[in-house]
Length: 227
Ligand SMILES: [Zn+2]
Image 1 (cartoon, rainbow, N blue to C red):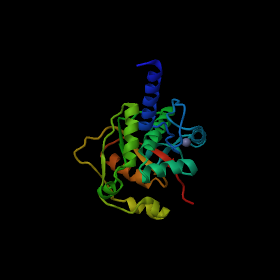
Image 2: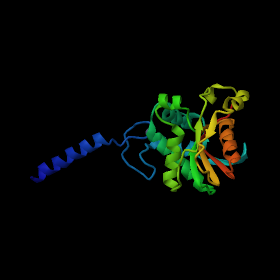
Image 3: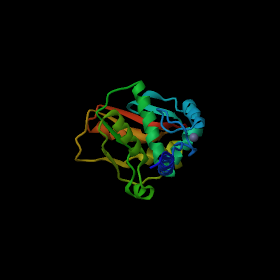
Image 4: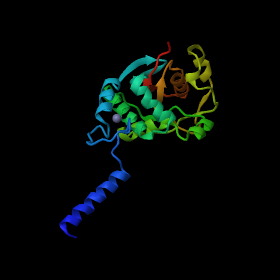
């Protein structure tokens, strides 16, 4: 192959590769030229991530030893979670999982197993995936801690987001159960997407502690507050 032809060959190959694996921003889909450690995020979105994905934790809430969160369920973070949860943007789940893992690392506590808030079978069929499981798996891979299903959802209740603050606790009562055959570890991290009144995590935590788990932690993508 002549030099000129070779150049052309590689140029075509690169174009084909870009076509197969476009370097697009995980958040907005814009073309990204440079990849940083952060993954493919455009300049504009990188700024929003820095502003809103600040991360933090709360101790001793709803019987849970510590709950880590990425940010507040508003503006850009809310948009990301909704795209991931309702519109099948699964790469965002990996990214959010990566950030949650980094938030946990800043103020870590030891846990033996990572689990997630389960979906009811019917919900899982209609959505096609459990968003909390995707995040939990990602945190598990990064931290090298086993991620496993410990809970199941036995009642298909109304989504917590459609229920007012007062009724939320009642709405989750008795909707979860433990997988009977599983031997439970000493400490568990439960992953969920949005923490509002904390009723869902509290109910999961209650079941785990009843069966002898000593420490239960929560890892959520966002905190929401009801006005
Ligand atoms: Zn972007």
